[in-house]
Image (cartoon, rainbow, N blue to C red):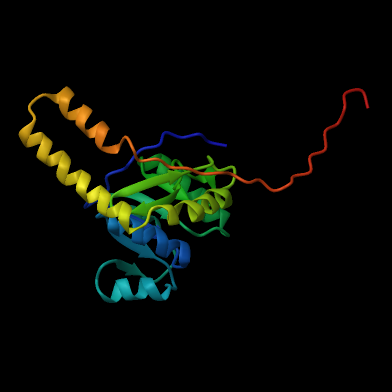
Length: 209
C-alpha cells in the first residue's frame, strides 16, 4: 500500500504517452486531453473512441508495441494501461526512475510512482477518491454513488460562485471581508450520505489455540 500526496497536476501542453489502446487507455487519454495535454497513444490496436481521436488528429497514434524511443523528445508523463505484461511494466518503471518520468501503471502500484484516483466530475468540480491501492474497485464504486448527487443545478451554482468571487475581487478590497462573504455563500451547502456495508465474515484466531 502506498499512501501518496494528493495533488492537482497541471499537464497543459505537456507531452504524455499512453501505452495500450483499450477502455482504460481511452479513459486516461480523455482525461489527459481534457486537462490540455499533448497525447501519444502507443498500441497495435485502438478502441473505437481512440481511433476517432486519432482520425481527428487530437492524438498521435503509434500502431505498435512500446519502444524506449517513445519517451524521447520531452515526454513528461506515461500512463501504462497494459496489465498483463509484467516485463513491460518493470522496464517502464526502470526507465521512469532513470529519466525522472511520472509513471502510472494501472492496477500495478509497485510499478508506478503515482496513481490515478477515481474522479467525480461536474463542471469545474473534481472529487478524487483513492484507497491507496487497497481496492480500486471500491474507489470506482464510491464514485458511482457520488456522481448522481452533483446534478446540473450544482454546475449552475459553481458558475454563479465563479462570477460572484470575481465580482468581490473587484468590489471588495478587504481580503478578510471577501473570504467571509464567500464562506457565507456556501454555508448552507450540505452533503448528506449514509454508508451501507456488506456482511463480512472474519475469522479471528484466539491466542494459544
